[in-house]
Image (cartoon, rainbow, N blue to C red):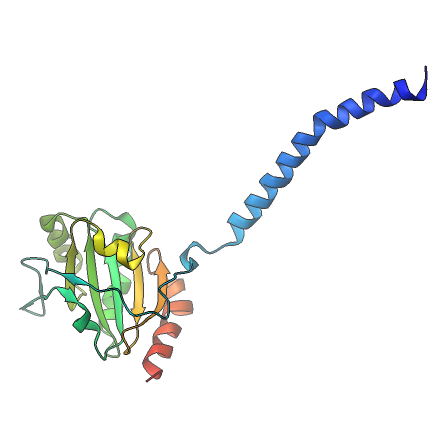
Length: 195
């Protein structure tokens, strides 16, 4: 048997194994990239830009400290460090983050406002009555247009607006103990310190 004839089966096996090796290499690369990224740190093209033009009606019947809660517009952000939280009563992670929002609402350096995303008014009121309303203002985004303007991927999301009316930070996903302490509180401190 010639050397040429002996090399043919080896080459055939290599050709058969090559797609498998390539697939495993790509799968490993995708797994590594997906496993090492923090989904809450999705970059936003809006960072450093003025908050989108927002004019949302109030959530009817909602009160805060005994007074009706106003809707949301850009004047709400003027000269204040503001956290804008996009939420909905049907959003499971929103239920998990509400205690952290209640704690943030007590921070006198900031104001906390909400955008109620594609929700039914009665459900939204029941949600806030159940957990307590942390929002000083709450606008209703019934059709989702404002969320598109803000670049929302899904609820919940939270934006930090500086005194200059520009978006300083965006948190994708629910606020929790870890990201509150490690990411959001330092971002708030920077926004409060900047003039």
